[in-house]
Amino acid sequence: MQNTPRTIPQETDLLIIGAGTGGATLAGIVARDTGHRVTLVEAGPDYGPPDRSVWPADLLDPRPGATSHDWVYEGIAHSAQPEPINYWRARVIGGCSSHNYCNASVGHRCDYDGWANMGNPDWNWDSVAPAFARAQEAMRVHTPSVEELTPYHVAYLDGAAEVGIPRVSEFNNPDEERGVSPFPVNVSDGMRWNSAFAYLDPVRHKSNLNIVDNALVERIVLEGEKATAVQVFADGQHHTIRARRIVVAGGAYCSPAILMRSGIGDPDQLRRIGIDPLHSLPGVGQNLTDHPLLLLLFNPTDKLEKQMAQLGGTARRSEVRTMAKIPSPHCSEGFDLDLISRTLHWPETDEMQYGIVITMVAPRSRGRLTLTSADPEAKPIIDIGYLTDAAENDLNAVIDGVEISRTIGATIARAGLIDGEKDPGAAVSSRQGVGQWVQSTVNSFAHPSCTCRMGPTNDSGAVVDHNGKVHGVDGLYVCDASVFPVVMRAPTNLPTAMVAEHLAARIGDIR
Ligand SMILES: Cc1cc2nc3c(=O)[nH]c(=O)nc-3n(C[C@H](O)[C@H](O)[C@H](O)COP(=O)(O)OP(=O)(O)OC[C@H]3O[C@@H](n4cnc5c(N)ncnc54)[C@H](O)[C@@H]3O)c2cc1C
Image (cartoon, rainbow, N blue to C red):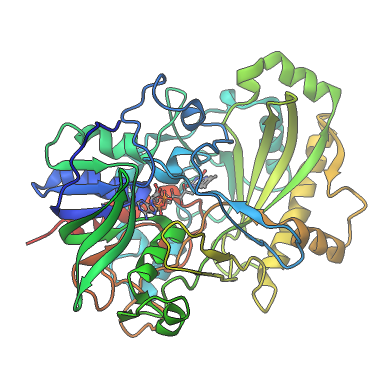
């Protein structure tokens, strides 16, 4: 909702770069709870409060497939794959929460206790639980009922129970290591309830909040060891906005890129691309972590097709799916596999596909993000590093996930709803064969994180401290999925909102 002509402020109290989940959550809370002038700068458009005539339909439709506002990043997922894949990232108010799958999970207690054990006091489960509770309320998270499931998803739920995964009523119990349930979603009134609806709309009327959309932050200005301003390109012009405090919330790909363009990172790497290194922090862009994803596909029987057809066009494409969490034999703590029942609809042919998504949610593999140039529109090099841990723990866990999914698939076949496997197919049966299929088809669960990870000063790879403040730079913070010390056993949206909820009072305390 851009007013033209508009005035871009020259100074502010708190400047937040990026209106995705981290940025929108933080901006909304600080604007609500303080009198500080909050300026939120977003590269994409701001469509305002939910209004089906203003918002592009794909961004409101909670079923997967929103691709209209993408940054268009890509990379090679695994050396066994010749072609790059797309790493989806939204460029719009609400960030990726405006085009994601709406799965709202918290992970396991051990995720956050592990963060605290890495030297981040007050980030253990008991400390972050209240922030999670507030985020769940704001994001309207609820668990759909079994009655909302399609026959395929009901068969999956029953099948998982039959192979020994207990049916749980509350998937977000942080103490459970196994369970299956319809997965909790942030969907309201049939709309994807994004972080901007949740956190910005309640404070849009406040005069201390200024949202500057369609504005690309090029770099942060450092004066000595203090961040004092940002340079922004908007409305065809370059602007400088001075700020008492600056927060980078561009997400796990853009946040390290913004820091590097500003001269913060590995000095040698920065020099190689013509950027003057101003502050050495070698961890920027390192430690990139994502959940690897595989999709096992089944052949539907006529019985399933008929049952689905009876539901009608909209209902059979329901966003309500089920998810099982389970420890593989390679798991050392909590659980390491999420297995999700999945239907896919292809609008061009009206074809439905039926499968199980296998994701390894405690990956040990790490990648990195680097820049090729100081140009803010240049694409970064994303080396995601799936399945590259030396001990092949991730690969073996995913293969276990395929085997477990096949046993669930066998129960759905016995119920008469599927007839054999379409991909990779029964011929791929040995562990080695499955491993090769995994490497050649592994894809992204779209949960990049940890590229500006939180840690104490004696952790040479840490970028921010436990308050989100960039080590060694005054007035500069990061608040998004890039600060996770280790990715949690859950999709990353709700945890990112939790991080912003947890940091808001500290970052908003500007004196
Ligand atoms: C296809 C897809 C499906 C997903 N499904 C789920 C799911 O079901 N459940 C779940 O929990 N998570 C899911 N996720 C992940 C989740 O949405 C993200 O982890 C979460 O949104 C991360 O929040 P963030 O604040 O770190 O970054 P983002 O939400 O990506 O926000 C970053 C924002 O910063 C802006 N920005 C970046 N650079 C600049 C710049 N230079 N100047 C100005 N603005 C800038 C971007 O445009 C963007 O709006 C999914 C993600 C994708 C892509």
